Image (tube, rainbow, N blue to C red; front, top):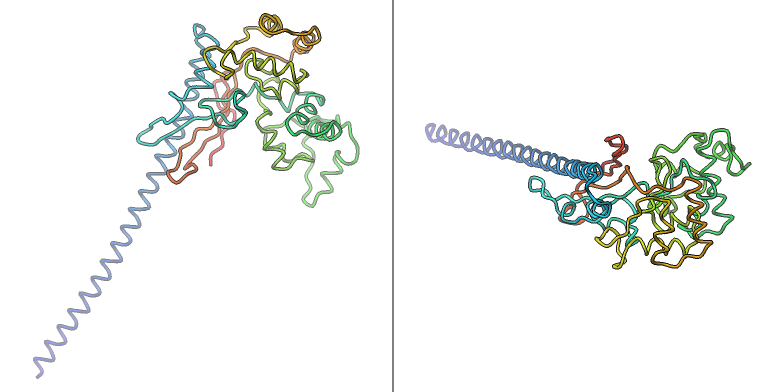
Length: 339
């Protein structure tokens, strides 16, 4: 009987030991699996990040190549940078799909992110250099506000950036910002980035998102006549019909931006003459174009471009996107934002 008990005890001990070892093995395997999954996720994240950064590098390289080669025709430059799905759509970087799209309005379609390539920052109205009149016209054109409302917002924008030049009293001056629940001072300096506009009195998220395709804080304030939207041209001072004529003439026979039949203005002082060769211009319309040249508001070239390099997710949306503003003049990144 004692032998049987001893054998039973040994068996029970062995079973408990086996059970313990089995549980321990399962726990160890679970830990190993978690680590493997974690390492796979980290590796995937690193590959996605590297792919998105590769998209940025390609956009920078193509922009530099297109603009620095004097043998490349201006219309070809537009095609390479603003309408080039062969280069910017569905790029494969180590098995990761990447695409590069403009960060703002496509003047051909009026939509955001429908083209493949980069956006010209000098097609937009500069918040730091534009007069109150230009800002007010932009607000009217982009938001559909009446003159009084548009002028009030334009004054608020200008007062935010202009040191010691606050033209309005009370509602828009320093007292307003000091009276907020969480007060902050007016900047009295230029905008460093576009989303700083959200700090200005009268600007909310919806207003900001509507204005964003038409505004910039980069560059010297000259607007590129070859890429400016109708809204930007009206803001500069052209009548709506004239702005429409200019954009339509620029697009060529197919009425599309950045295609082979586009007309590219070589010099801003030739704009009126070029258009008049195909489209009737009234003397008042010629004077409007001449006035923009006289005020030194136009350019026919650009050197600052914005774009988004993004990695699509299989379930929709994007695994990673990098918004970038790149200066060809300085060959460096002016703005970088990841999400």
